[in-house]
Amino acid sequence: MKLSIIVAISENGVIGAGPHIPWKAKGEQLLFKALSYNQWVLVGRKTFESMGNLPNRHYAVVTRSDYTCHDKNVIVFSSIEAALEKLETITDHVVVAGGGQVFRALIKKADILHISTIHTVVDGDVHFPPVPENFRKIFSQYFSSNIDYTYEIWERI
Ligand SMILES: NC(=O)c1ccc[n+]([C@@H]2O[C@H](COP(=O)([O-])OP(=O)(O)OC[C@H]3O[C@@H](n4cnc5c(N)ncnc54)[C@H](OP(=O)(O)O)[C@@H]3O)[C@@H](O)[C@H]2O)c1
Image (cartoon, rainbow, N blue to C red; front, side, top):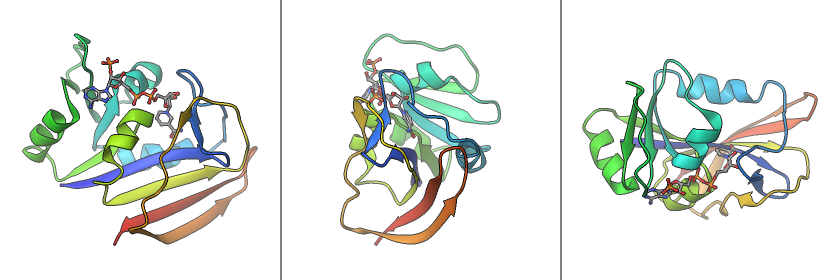
């Protein structure tokens, strides 16, 4: 099963401030929408509660609490390991969509990183971990928008 991380990171490494993403770069979220369409999306409970669920995706939400969700497209798991074990039996691709805790837990297991660097410097309290050295950049494209951003694809060597 392939694991693809998708994340948007400010130039100073911020991915979130409290529950929010502290910028709005027009067009950038289309990348997430395209990559996650009809896919299983793995998220931490905090990210799921702040971003909600888009149609045409299945969600695996991890929590250590008694959090529940009755949407038919959402399964709640008590650990990342339990989520991956079940997902192995139902899909060959999982989009790991955050937030910070889930990225930190899974970056070493990821096969592909889709990273949008948002060309802004912002305050925030949630950061993306350093990209491990065994990843190499295979694609990069600059986008002009209200806030410019650069989309990169990194693959594990
Ligand atoms: N810029 C981006 O691309 C991007 C993408 C996604 C999210 N974000 C931002 O990231 C921030 C949220 O990140 P976060 O690190 O605070 O939280 P998070 O990773 O979204 O969720 C953390 C929660 O997930 C559960 N969890 C984490 N690890 C677990 C494990 N091993 N087993 C079981 N449950 C586990 C726990 O839920 P319980 O507390 O319920 O036990 C934990 O409190 C927000 O600001 C959001 O906007 C940014």
